[in-house]
Amino acid sequence: MSTILGIWHAGRSLFRLLWGALNILCVAALVTASFAGYIDPDTCAWAQLPGMTLPLWVAVVLALFVANLFVMRKMALIDALAFIICSGPVLTVCPVNFGPHKLSEADKARSFTVLTYNVINFTDQKGVEPEWGNRTLSYILSTDADIVCLQEAVPIMGKYRNKHWQKQLDSIHARYPYYDQTRYNLDMVMSKYPLKQLDIPPHDEWDTGNYSAYQVDIEGHQLTLVNCHLQSIGLTPGDKELYLELTEKETIRPSRKEIAKVKNDLISKLLEAFRQRASQARDIRDFLDTRQGNVILVGDFNDVPGSYAYRTVRSAGLRDAYADCAFGARATYNANRFYFHIDQVLYRGDFKAYSINRAKVPYSDHYPLLTTFVWDTAAAKVDATTGSHPDRKNNH
Image (cartoon, rainbow, N blue to C red; front, side, top):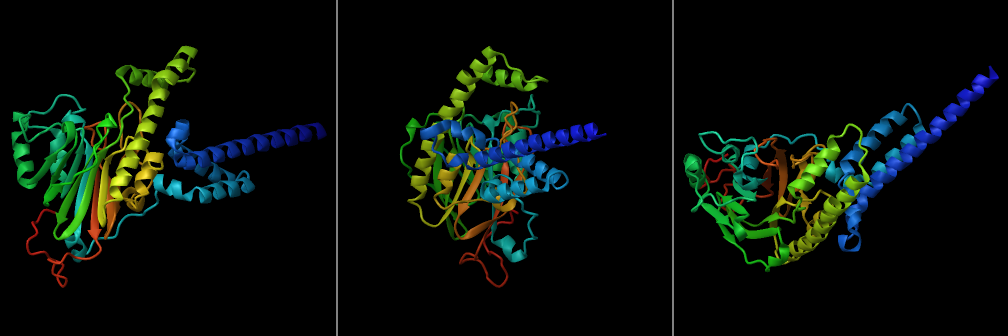
């Protein structure tokens, strides 16, 4: 009997030791992923890799915390302490907001919506386009957003006009009288409100990155709007195929050849993209530092919340609409099993983000984000007693 008890106690001690070690490792991973974005990629680009995995470690440590309430309560305290220490980064990636209140009529009169969407040149990822037109354009029209910011968008209003899209393009032209297409025909802004393109510093060395800026007059409120697309990873079809092959394996046991290829072809491109995005983010921040007042910056960052590029742009005094309004982690990229939140909506000024919606429409390799903002005060032209605007179109 004593022998059995001895074996049981030894086994229990070993389990507690291994369980404790597992908790410590996962907590360390959570802390590392939370603060990796503070490290400049020019100093250590490798530090950005853990930050991409933060939602995973949040889920793991949360599961361990719940289990520890029954298994090892002292370890649950360590899990809880880790969440407290990492609360800022964690709540940025996995916010906890329980839904917006209903807008009053006065708030509705002060609201406006912004859609950001990487449309991969309006190429339908579902395959053959329907005869009636383009699914991406149909979705954009269905949102009735006041301002539409697109990335990777071929011109649709000029000589590249597609005859099959004619009715949709006519609707877009009528709904959005203010339209601009920028550098190399990559980025596009469509607006119901008057906009004027702003001069920005030259950035031809940005490679696949780009940004454009506008002054927008929203019923008397002046707003600086920035539409950006930061450096892409630049993976070839072969790189993506390798990644898919590795993630398809039931048991991940890559060969030495596969490990070498991942290091040379995938990781090296990721590290270089981190460095380039860091430089691009600093350029955008420097531009924003020259702009006073209201700012909205949207676009495809090709990088996650909490990354160095993200933090650098936010250092211009910007808030994150997703962190302010959403609940839980959400991917905005949906292709090749790269399920990351890489599209961002940042802002500052005399207004607040009221809600943000990620629409899970499968037409592009990105999901769109539609954000509703509400001005703190009505514009001068708005009747303060009724909340109505005499000249405003009934577009909502």
